[in-house]
Image 1 (cartoon, rainbow, N blue to C red):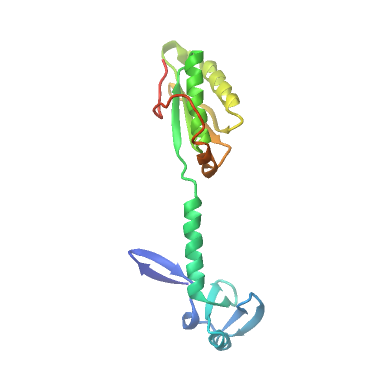
Image 2 (cartoon, helix red, strand yellow):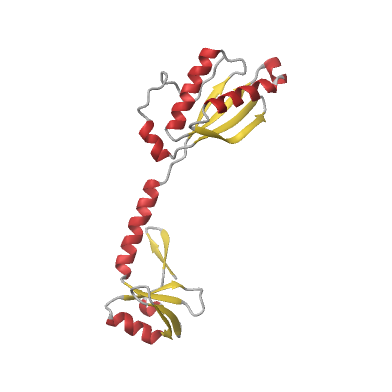
Length: 202
């Protein structure tokens, strides 16, 4: 392997052709066939005769493994795969929904609707139960509410981080069952009136 500075970043590429400075290599042919251990001169000659490159694919092996291939085509296809992989990666977003332990049924249904929409969109949701005053001595209220919510959205999400106390609050994280790319297809699903990501209910 050798390092090349490209646009301020270091790019590590395999050694090819005359950059391979070893006496012998384990050679793999252009079709993937095992040629065996050959002298580097013979490997370079075979690559030249095939109008291809000799590429060191396993430099730490003893002897190093080299393959005869079109290195330019290999780099192009690898770049395409890398771009496709980055494009398909889910960008994880954590939404937040705040509730009070003594939330009324109407507000609960509204909040649940927003959580449902977030999960269907492929986003994680941090549920925060905010305790005030004497409510802090009743953590079971938060546990009960979080358990109820987790059960109500069980068909589209699961508990990724179990309920835990965090100062005056109690937290739980829900994650979608669907991947974000799949969840985007559900964005047009009717949901309760839109609301800010982070809300508080008295």
